[in-house]
Length: 148
Figure 1 (cartoon, rainbow, N blue to C red):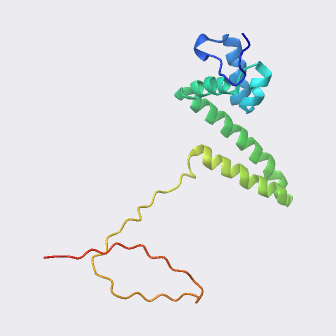
Figure 2: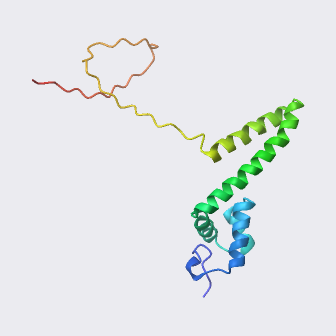
Figure 3: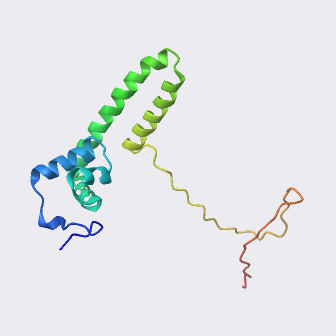
């Protein structure tokens, strides 16, 4: 019976450790895409994703990959510094992208959560708003009456 290429192979059946090692090297060290790795190793992309995800779930692996990637980015930034000193605008743009990658890798670009819920304790009777005459205003307010 021919295997359906869309149907995932059963990862729990196992794969030779050498093939897993090669898969992880291609995915995590060389940064290849799952489809490309799948073509190279004769595997469906979701099997590549399964083994890669399983490896990343190990805390030690995450730390090692983060450390290795940070080293690569730092080397790249060091090489760009020489070109920036010569006034190369493309190098400046690339350096900014490398810095952004470093910040993301280290978790420094995390969005800040802001609570925008508020309570109005004084009733608002009139609101003056200066707007262009062609502006459209949509108001969604819930009026409640205070009873004592």
